Image 1 (spheres, rainbow, N blue to C red):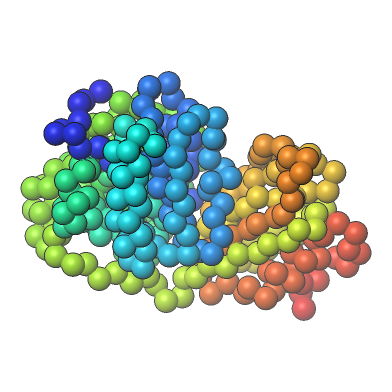
Image 2 (spheres, helix red, strand yellow):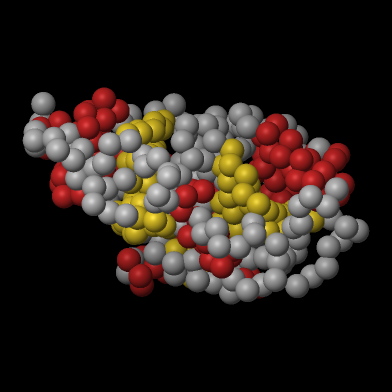
Length: 340
């Protein structure tokens, strides 16, 4: 590992479009025996934070959540504040960390985040931007690059491009995507990453960010950047303390994805399932959906399901009605929510 420059703390910005696999990679980083103490700043688009439940917390990391806004616009001031607070706690000996990882929301343009390390004097003094790591979904990336400016920016500003889900795409599709990414960003190495499995030396302390190279791509990089998301993309959260019936929930999700899958950019949640002592964690992108068993509910812990849906013109009332019909003990078929 490289040494800190003049006492500055290296920072990795971890970006990538919704559902690309950023949190999976972050779990891999936290699990690795690299000897670093890492402070994690989590940003989620929406009113409820899910990723902190998904992240492994078996080690002594400091994890800070920033919800209900995009780190590149409405909560950028919070990023400066949090970095300042982390540094203050480090200077006083109350907190030890060697590296900071910022995981942005999938709708973030990385440029304003990176700007923070050059235009704010205190941040520039205490931290150095080590690299922007972008995870790219091999299955959905072409459509995302076609439709979303943020996906193009994430690829263009990357110091490393990590291709996820290559096992779900054909070799020809992966090759074509790689060629497209090289055309967008010829300076960033492209590496495969399966379930977050990548050499840590390729993502941490790589001294990959080069301001002069970024200024060649975007001469206005250090100017103030205005940033707006697509008006038709929004998010909502659903919470319920009553347990779900797993079979009914699976039926409803199957029908919902058939109908609204193309517009569901990202959905994830922590579920309280009747008869299960552990949380059930689910994540999905469009039609790709997976669920895993999480950590056990503590005996004195309130059990509550929390779900977040991000998408284009989503029928919130209809989805909430269907989820309500998936509770344990409800007799009405949840499919009726999608047919009425």
